[in-house]
Figure 1 (tube, rainbow, N blue to C red):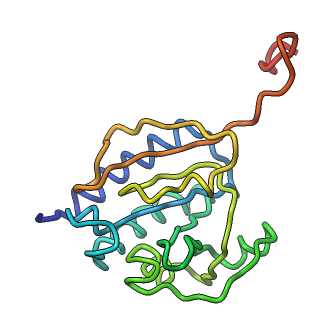
Figure 2 (cartoon, rainbow, N blue to C red; figure 1 turned 90 degrees about the horizontal axis):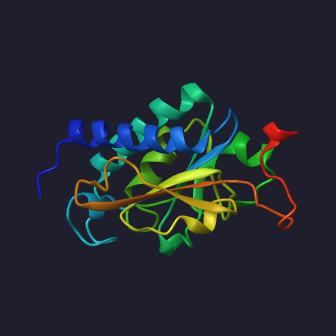
Length: 186
C-alpha cells in the first residue's frame, strides 16, 4: 500500500483534535499513543515497522500536544512489555518508575523509536495513568488509561490501513440514587 505522509498527518491531526475536544485535558495531563506503523502501511502488527511513518506520527502529535502542555507517552509493543517512552521530567513529576530499555524497531516499534529520538530527555516507564489516548492498529492502550474509560469516536476510523480507536477518562460516579453528579446544581 502506498502511503501519503501529508494525508497521514492531516487525518491524524483531525483524530487528535477530536479526542482532545472530547477529553477536556488540561495542562500537565498525559496523552498515550499506541501505534502500529505496520498496520498503517497495510501489514500485520509487528511485521512491517516503518520508521518514516513513525516519525510522521510522533512529530504530528508533538506539534499539537506541546503547545497545550499535554505530555505524550508512547506505548511500545509486547516485546518490551508495553512500556512507554515519556519525558524524564514527567516521570519524575508523576513518581513513575523508570525501567532500563531503549526501544528498537522490532522491540518497541517505530513510534517508540521516533519518540525516543524526538523527546528532549526520554525515559521508559512500565506503567502510567493517562487521561486520554489513541490506539492506531489495535495495540490495546486501555491498560494505560485512567478509570473510568470512555470510548471516543474520532472522525476517521482508519489511519492508512490501521483501525483507530480512542479513549478518554472521567471521574467515577459513586453513591446511589440520591447522589448528585452535576456540580452546577450545588
